[in-house]
Length: 198
Image 1: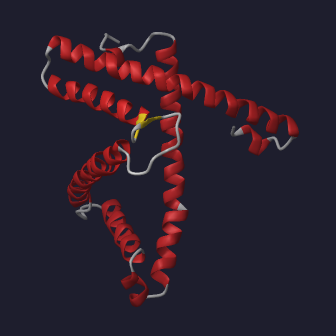
Image 2: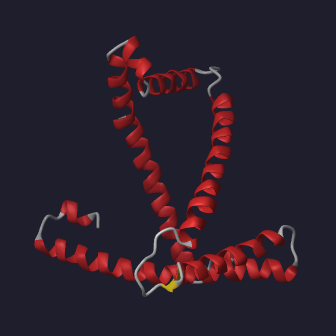
């Protein structure tokens, strides 16, 4: 996929289309493998009654309920026309969305705690990080424009140049790690996700 940007020819475009089709096929099978792995892991926890096995039971109940309400579509099954305000819509709107909001709000407290510990200006690097964070935060709110017209421009530059460079480096590292882990799983070297030894 990256090669098409460096080899601008019809053959690289054709290869990209074939790769994209294969990616969709593999992703479809990966959903089933992921579901099997998840259910197998939680079934092992329920069977062995390890600490927190009740949460694994909730995973089974939630998955089964979501599948049933997803297929049973407001009095009709999924092959009929979609009804509005079905039980599945209710599950999404009143369980999934609030649960996601709860997780992200808890995460905000962890981030605030980590920022407080990190942004204490003890060295010049932490001082630079503190000043940069303040500039970006002030540049993202309307009061930044009232203080100076340059603050939003500086904040945009920080996000577009140094931040994006660091983000790309992190994404490359994560991608290489994902490829290495995938190869270990494919060749049977990594079995920890199934509850086995490495």
